[in-house]
Length: 595
Image 1 (cartoon, rainbow, N blue to C red):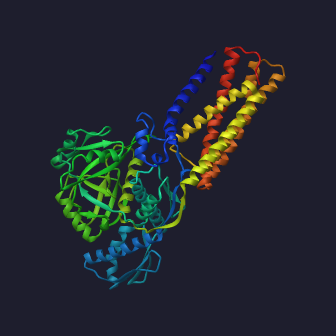
Image 2 (cartoon, helix red, strand yellow):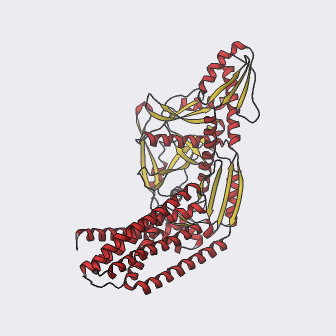
Image 3 (tube, rainbow, N blue to C red):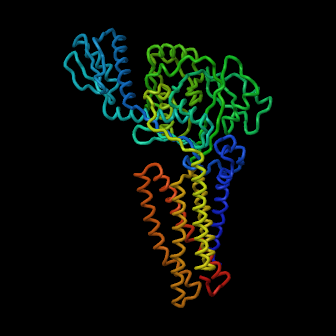
């Protein structure tokens, strides 16, 4: 056997072992009871910590659940921002000792009509308006009447931000239910698709009420970093999977402040640990989701925060938050604008707590906790971002934080556009029929291949089995959701894999009829068949890409599964049968093929 044969064998064996490891959580998930599949806590108890966290999940059409499309009134967000800008202009002019006759929005458009007392006041107004240059512009100026309008690019940005803010807020709330893999994503320009599989009728009612009726709560709280509550809690013994950690930052007089906290892979484990001993009356425990910084890693951790119970400031005082680039410090930062009442409270709060950490909390989940560097007057707040990531990563962190801050105000009303409940009975029926169809197709295919191609047919069946293992493991690695259209994609993938084997075997038969030896026929047959198989798979892949680009919902699910299957087919349908036949003709020196 040559070294090429050995390398291909080791590659296939390694890939099979890796695929089995990745597929195991999905196998456990499929075998679990329906009630357990709906609970993240139950599944975590079944799946070993040594296995991957990703797996294939049943979609809403296979196990029932809630399908909800929420519309975002982005136009209202734009109008609200215009109204706030009008209020800010009035306040700024009053601070400079100037009065305006009126400031009002013109109809539904984001345009403000500003009427001055005298033409001489325009110079003062111009200084105030220059602050928003690039996002607002003067459309007309007739002396005492100025029309001040939002630019098209800024208006579009506000619309997009309103939807993004709503998505982040809704996802945070849905995660609190502990359901497995909810889908919350943007659909179109101003809609949000929410799909939660496996909910009971009572759960669906709660979700609808919470999503539609609840207003996001944004709070600013002081972190109690010197409190040893978590250290004392650890001294009494922590549950398995919870560990005591310390973080550090520069406090007053540049002294190093060490603050204890608890770390675990789920919020539920931290709550179990905290339940053993109540915190002091003047503080509350809050939690933060920590995403992995390793590229491509899916691991998520949770940590605790001990915050002062008193909330000096909420999102009601926030006017806006946006990302800036500080050229002096060469880094991105987040700027916040507070209303007049909030600015006064915030100035006192920051003045009393310089070099202490202030937690930004949305729906009782801590997003970040920057250190207060100095007293912050006038309601203009600048939040600098720590960390050692690239500029692109810091820019993304700044955008995420700005979304959290703006989400607390929830500037755009959210309303239901479409509600649909898929019953669990329908889901079970679909799963059973899908299984029956796949099993029937597989059994018929195996029978035909064994009867028609004999030993080579058995090789093709083995290659197809490994092919499906690779496909299943790949879907699990991407945390894919299996739907009925996805199952259709699986069935088509099986057909294409069989088709590739048929092309190869017929080529080998042709070479054998020409009088070639078994080894020569195998080499020539695979070489001549490869171009046809490759061209067919490339054509199918291009069609899948078009469906992914222009399709939606079920069409995208079908295209995703089929595209992954095409890529895997190109490898497994060619490499594995040829590897086996090479071994038979070179190592075992078989002179006649059963084909």
